[in-house]
Length: 473
Image (cartoon, rainbow, N blue to C red; front, top):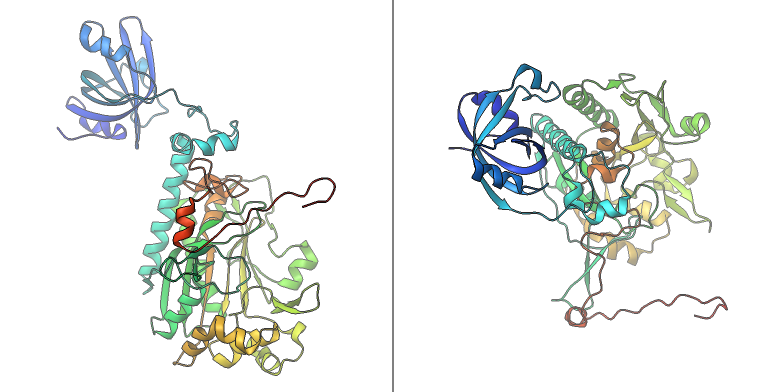
């Protein structure tokens, strides 16, 4: 007999079937034992009667989370016993055979609640148990559905999904890199990508024209708020496009995603409103404003585009730095100022962010597709010719090989999912997240390395000692 999922038992009324899964609950009622068997599809009620003493006795030993294989016949429940809260609540399984596949220790945390009442550190330490709860199962299912829908949507529009490298070159792009020391080349190191920014532009040089991927990104940032050391973004790039082309694609994609997968959600305004950076800051004091008319409505989605960002801003030391990333292009009317190095503070970038309910859920821009323009950006922010060549020589060379005009965007998948699922943070929609201070409690990471491992890559660690109250190191 083939295995049947719990949610589908109603299709096999009167037939003998096999179920496999976990004991969710055992209820003893005199001469009858009820077992709620849980699998990935849901729960099925299974019945053991005392007249089969051996089978009944075996069922009496079952405990929560034991893994079992059960054979039984699907029967309709008495009308008074129908459970309207379950899709299969009109049926139950009359058990005829039971095999215990694995026993389980008592769960360290409850999984029959939504889990919010449990300390997050305890939940993350036992994440493989925490993930058993229905809420998180639904969140991961939603994640799958959203990514699958987006992948199909883009594929139907002639985009090609391309995986870009996870170990690459460390280049100064704003955030701090995670470094990967090389054993083969002592003293040198790879870096994990902050984003596929350079690779997706190189794909445009290669003539791919329409690229996307669901990219893993890594940033060694100071811990604060809702950040994670690693996260997922929908990354895409298009050739021969203007700013409007990219924004319209994403807007239509997000509307289609919400209306297809979550019709209970209401998008407040279509097309999405557009605000300049200056207008958003003046009106709302934020470049990711929450524009919901009713902020108490969890199913209301207020998308908004923020455009016309300043390209450069001054640091505390008076130097210029980029506001988004150095690869963006200025708006066409400001190209001359960029190349002349004039009115630097007034140059407006061809950049755009998408805000949703007070969060930034994505951002992108049209790129500098000539080496001269990109080189000028690095000169304005103070890089020497040697620094530009060492860090970005490969990009400058590539742009001289027939780079088309191009632009793209990176959309934060974790943040979008948290909002769609009405979750308080992105950790609730990631299977195995880190804590807010970037620790993996389940795997006990980061962890110390053995001296032999350090020796292999030619590294020695220097421990920082806390300064005592007298100020001595």
